[in-house]
Amino acid sequence: MTTTSTRTTPSTRAWITAVFVTFTLSGLDIATWLGRIPSVRDSLGASTLEMGLLVLGMAVGSIGGLTFAGHIVAKLGARRGVQVAAVCLLVGMVAAGVAVTLGWGFAAIWIALIAFGFGNGLVDVSMNVSGAAAEKAGGRTIMPLFHAAFSLGTLAGAGLAAVTERFAVPVVWHFTVLVVLTSIAMFVAVRGFQDEHRFEAPVSTDTSPIAAPLTRWQVWAQPSTILIGVIVLGMALAEGSANDWLPLAMIDGHGLDNAAGAAVLTVFLAAMTAGRVAGSPLIDKFGRVPVLRTSAAVAVVGLGMLIFIDSVPIAIVGVVLWGLGASLGFPMGMSAAADDPRTAAARVSAVATIGYVAFLAGPPLIGFLGEHVGLLGALLVVFVFIIAAGLASGAARERGAAARPTRSGGDVDGGGEPRLQAERSDSTAGGRDAR
Image (tube, rainbow, N blue to C red; front, side, top):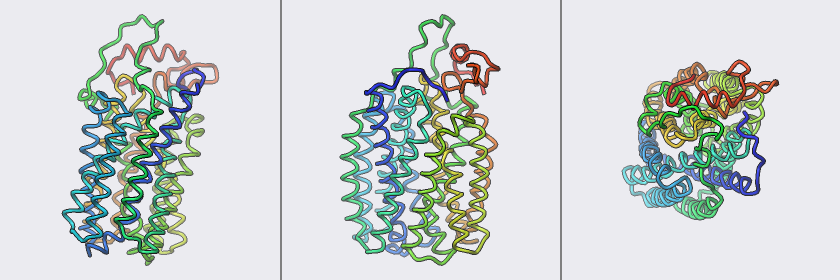
């Protein structure tokens, strides 16, 4: 992917670093909750279905955060969006920890997770919008690396959670200390964010007419928005189902204890991180679409090994392949949604909202099926969504300023036409779907 030929300045490097830090802290927060799910289940004495309904609380909050994120980021900017999100994450996680440790019950934890989920949805859109703009400023593909930083954060959070599970550290102290530190760090990090609207101005040499940008609601009528949403939905379910259910699936389906189940989640997150680090040069070389299709195939193979082969070592190999396959779908979907900077916040919000349906419907659906066929069998539903993501991958093809040039300097998707011509074509198309 080629975005601009602008040389990376110190301020742009500081911006990119700030986005990296924010992604890492966000991953650390979410994995802290996910890694303590076994303790939460034990505290409540909850069934698989009840745990699915509990995780639904966070998904409900996330949908709310995503719904308002487009408005908040458009009005206040990504920096303020992250700061508001940090407060919500702090309140939600501390409340959840207190509710678990003091035995306040299912309803109290559910409400706390709504606040935590709202912050998670808001920070997701905010940092992706800023990250997409920083990617353009940097002039090369770095969105998968931002998401690799998120995975590093989840890896650290899951590893820490496994340790706290092993030594029975009270959930309230674990959650409180960690979220206070991460929230403060977010407020400091976002000082490096720059104005994400800096790329909205058209090229000065382009005199062709430009249609008015689409509103935050009109982007939902674009077929490309829906198809990119399908990609993100399928890959978010591939990722989210592991986050929500992998420790319990290894415990119930392969006979591991709580600490070992949390450790397998760490293996999955390490594979996600590796896939995202390796993904940037692959995307630059081959483009989003081939990488997406390959990723979907690898995820299906890995998930099948986990489900169908009754062997812990082989299941762990499957977990690695599952993590590698699921690693790039979400970041590529976010980059595709942000290709047009004029509607980046609205489209990222819309696509992320579609993707978060996986977190909204996935936990209770898998929990319900798990009650009848076991968690391993319930994960078969993920296959369908991964396949759908692979089939919809053409919608993520690079366009305009994001298009990859051919060796002769032309746009690969424009039959060798210069990139400036592709940019002009996109501008005159206005809101029309060019995919």
